[in-house]
Length: 124
Image (cartoon, rainbow, N blue to C red; front, side, top):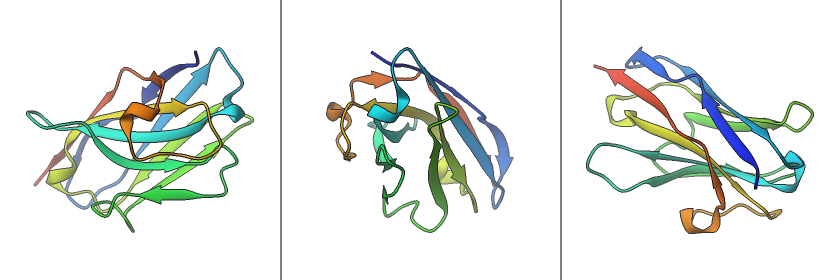
């Protein structure tokens, strides 16, 4: 299994930006499509977006489309989630996840490896 460690979370005002990183180790990063999910208190973990293992394609949840961008650097074994125009409803713990496949998935059950999560808090 690949090991994943997220970083970059924090407290930001509404309208601000954050960039989360997800560093992978243990297996070749380029074998995995990478997903981002988030979980707010009392809510289910929800899909945010994914990027294919080539990095050529990404898909986003409607709630973040146009504001969030996922990228990856296979040479650095790292995936990124750039979050702009943040809103209080974006407050959650954010998780990256790896899927041993070329294509991504919106279903969290399709991901075999997860990071520990990083807290993002957006104040109004």
